[in-house]
Amino acid sequence: MRMPSLVVAMAAAGAVGLAAQTLDLSRYQMVDLSHAYSAKTLYWPTSTSKFALTRDASGPTPGGWFYAANTLSTPEHGGTHLDAPRHFAERGRTTDEIPLEQLMAPAVVIDVTKQAAADRDYRLTPEAVLAFEKVHGPIATGTAVLLRTGWSRYWPEAKAYLGDDTPGDASKLSFPSYGVEAARLLVEGRGVAALGIDTASIDFGRSTDFQVHRVAAARNVPGFENLTNLDRLPPRGAFVIALPMKIEGGSGGPLRAIALVPR
Ligand SMILES: [Zn+2]
Image (tube, rainbow, N blue to C red; front, side):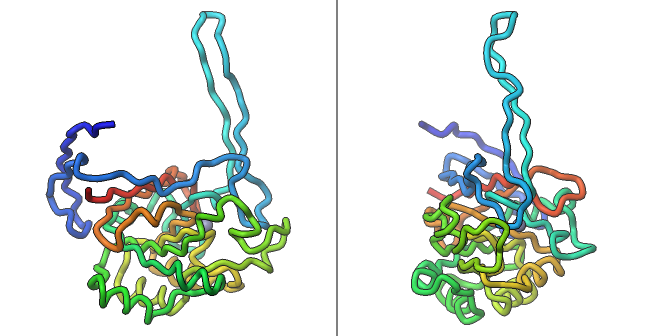
């Protein structure tokens, strides 16, 4: 399909590299970073509910036209979703309060697929962040950092993806993510807009104290979890748009995340 040559004038003050420039969407490939929601959607093992879609109507009306409508219900934290700072900080921003500049931002993708394949409990280190910067340049303030572990290839197989599929038990989870010192460097040192990942959590599966969540939340940095298709993004140059359902007072929410990748 040919992209319409739609030209949108954008003046996103505050977003790095976006000051009053023209966004020509025909110059970008759009990559979907969200898993679809269904009965197979993975949730934290202790979640008391799951995604549910109930059919209210689907079929012909007395008037002769077709009509469909459903009711959905879902925990905030499952599938591809946002962690609002409020998730781990009492005074952190709620879902509806997060500035759009943190949900729409230039992205860097740190590829740790090799390390994660060798060790499913791998945690990103400050050294790995510095090594990335040495090759790809410094991570600027306002950047969305996306950590690519390769884990979305396991979705939605709970045992492979989460490391364990025992209902109600989160004590035996095992999957890679950020380490707390790397999170500190990114959040406090670089002032990143958001931390994203293609696993279930910005803390690794074995975590019992969720230090990365707490470091990020303390600085009002949101998380994007259970992302997919990160293998289709360059290490730098993509622009991520990760817009959650705008839940007033929410601690997170379902997230439709996409990336614009220069052609
Ligand atoms: Zn979450």
